Every structure is written in structure tokens, then in C-alpha cells.
Image (cartoon, rainbow, N blue to C red; front, side, top):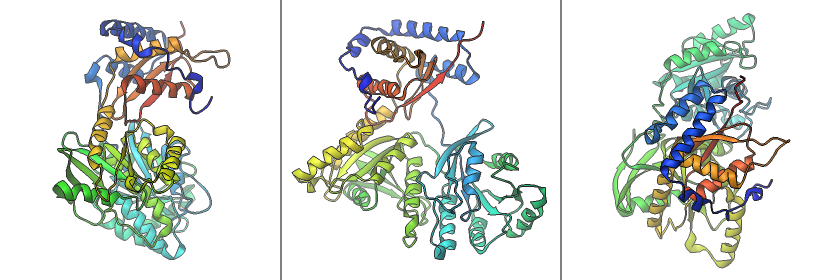
Length: 502
């Protein structure tokens, strides 16, 4: 099966016409029949809760508050990534003997005793040896800013080093809860080494072995006593101006865009908390509406730590996305679309925010470059062809007003909910016209579907077997063709359930 799902490419199946012929009452009756059919299957409490929501209609949508954030800091090679994997219960972070292996993702979603949280791992990069104190401290500084609780990891077998002392000075100043994690305490004989860390002045050291899991559950029990239910850092506000993050690689024109938008019709500039590291939000009038532009340029940049640039770019992007509802990703059309551009777009998709693509420096485009650009867009951005596209010049302000309808469309899609009856009518008609192919002699069936949440639209399908990735993409594409969803990611989750044994 190709990425383009050619196997299921059928837009001539008059699906829209057939759905138009299904009135709401009929759709609701059909959905109720499918729903009652689920009683023959083994369902867990989560499933039943979801099905109750599906019957509540519009009221059934729950907005999920921002998850509390736990940051893990410490110098290279103390076992931060091993601890991340242990807490998550899965192998996510890169673990190698080489200190500071670089990677793009720095935050992960986790769950502990039914509580969900975000884990920020600052172990993503090894600075040059000369700047190690400053750079580990800089990582800690950013992590403290963006978290609700900090886990400071020290290698108990080595004891506190000068670098650790450097970070401790920062941690003593913070008002946030800090847990001193004495790692590599693999058995009781090493407990005294952990106790020696009392003298750091950060309170009781928690002896753990990230590698073997020893002591990690006890540590988490204590962390969750002080971790807030909803993040104080990334709290999602409802009401008020819609929140927009301007993202893009360095020098793509983010500042020009903000300045142009603000200078022409500035309403009020709000310097929240006013420190050099705090993101600065600006309220700007554009297209007769007030928007809040979330800008993370305020997070202090350590330019001399060259290797850390990507790490910081990734952290800053994630910080902006945590606060935003829609992201405008700026692309410089005078340059080929880069891997970094695609990576930033993928971070937006991962965060579940709405997306608008703004092609900057459009006024500098000649015919030759335009031809290449269209080819690049087709090749590298095919997976986000649903995102509204605006051609602008941030420098001159040309076509800036076109951002407004694009933002409105993306946000409206992000907030859209399809009633359960309509969604099951869509699934029934689609599957009749294009059944899932046989795989190994079996054909997985879709028993029932519901939209679990909006922001982004998230659908759950109860099935008798796993649906091919190609078939799932096909369902998403047809959802877009019928219902729009322009400018928002669509999440499609499956719950494979077995028939109850009589």
C-alpha cells in the first residue's frame, strides 16, 4: 500500500449524495442500533464512559485541561533518559553510553496511577566541555520556567560535582517543588552514597535505580502529592482572544511579521512577568479582531552554545504550542523547504494544534523558483495539504490581512464536532462502498464510532481487528472531503474489542 492510499482512492462513489439522503432521525436510530450491538463485546470502564459521552451530544465534549509538567534536569550521563523511560514505562528517550545523545523530541506524555502528565527531558544534548557548567544550568533554567515540578538527577556513585553545584544555586531560588533524585543506587549497600547528598541543601535525596526501577515508584508517589492537577505553566484559558503561535526556523521572518502586525494596528502590548526568559504575549488587532500572539523569543538564548541551538528551538517551539490554539508556520519561499521546516510542522501535529502555513517573501519569487517550490510542497508537505495556505510578505505587510480568514477557518475546524448519528452514517456508507480488505483471511469490521473530543477533533472507532494505516488515512481523508476540517489535525483512535464469550 502506498502512502497516498491509492488502494482506497475512490472519490467517485457519491458518498456526499448518499449521506444527504440520511436524515437525522434515521442516523440516530442506526447509531443506537450499532451502539446496542456493542453489548455483545467485552468493554472496559473507559469504553463505557466514552459511550455515555457519545449519547450526550454536543454537551458530551470535554475540553482537556493542560497536563501538569515534570522536568528532569541534571548533567550529562547521570541517567536522565533512563529515568524518563522508567517513568513512562516505555522506551521513548534515546539511551546510549555516549553522554548527551541529541534528538528532536524533548517532551513526552505519561500516566501514573490514572494521572496524566507531560515529562520534559533536558538530556537532549551534550554541550562542549568548556561550557558544560553554563549550558547544563541554562537547560535547567529553561526547564524550571516551563515546568510545575523539577526532578534534579545526580549520580550517587560520583557524588555532587561542580556542575551539580551550579544547578543547585538556580534550584534553591525557584518557588517550584524540587526533588533531588540520587540515581544509580542499585542496592542497599549504596544507600549511604545517596545520604551524602543531603549537604546539597535541596532536602531529602530520593535513592533510585532508573535502570532497575528500584525506588522510582516511591519517588513518583511523593511527586504526585505536590504536582497540580492542571499545569500552572501551560494552562489553557477559554474565552478571550484566540491564541496564535508564530513558528518557523531562524531568520524566516517571525519578528518582521509580529512587528508589522503590531506596528500597524497595535492595541496593547502585554509583557507578562517581564523577565528576560518569560514568553512575551502581544494583543494585536488584525482584520477587525483582537488576537493574542504568543511569542517565545523572550526565552534567553545562549548563542555561544552552538550545539544547543536545536535543543532550544525545539523547547521554545513546544512552549509556544502549549500556550497556543493555532500555529502559523512561516516558510521562506526563497529557500528550499528544509528538514527543520518539516520538523516544526510535525511538532504542531504532535501537539494537536490547528495549523496555517504562511509562505513568506512571496514578493521575491520568480517563475523558476515558483515551479520548484510547488514541487517541494507536493513532495515534503503532502501530509499537511489540508492546512490553509497564505502567501505573504512579512517585511512589507503585503497580504497580511489574508491570515485572518485562514486562522478563523483553522480554529473553526479545530472546534468542530460531528454528532454521533451523523458520524456512524458516514462510517456505514463508506464501509459499504469500500470495505476493509481481507488481511490473512480476516476482515476487521468497524462496530461503532464516536467523536471523543474537539481541539483537535478526536474520533474513536470500536473495531473487531486492527485497521490498516492506509485504511485509517483513507477514513481521515474522506472525513475532510465531507466535513471540511481544513486547518486541523484529525486524530483517529481504535479500540479493538473481542466478542464476549457466552
